[in-house]
Length: 146
Image (cartoon, rainbow, N blue to C red; front, side, top):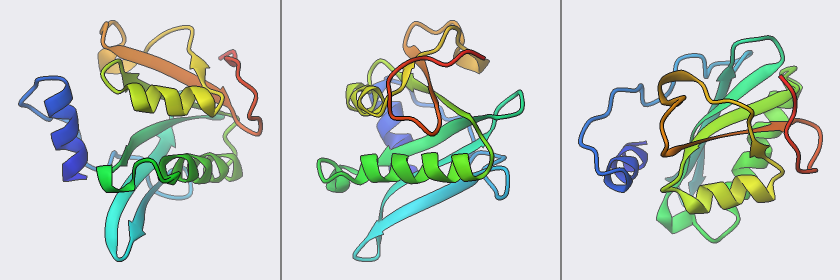
């Protein structure tokens, strides 16, 4: 998780971190947070929390260490989190990503995420933020209505 924070601070030329390492709400049964390991070393993490109205969850802190990139780790982790969110009763998964994370944006686009109609939270009007969503139970691209 500390690698995630360092990576984000470096990409966005920032020196402050105000969020929780593991976001509140990432606990079962409404949420989840998972860590992927290889040879006993944490190489990826991510989770989801309830988001506003019933049936919607927000993907949080999705990160793959450089050692795990290019090996399908992110795709597998995202699929796992989507399955867990669907099993927890969510019909839509949304997320906020940054324009300086092109590899993440490609991953989400390939997984069927589309640009959301509006942003939310602290970064709602931030030009460096991209808000995406995907109806769960489908791999077809397309935005869902909220």
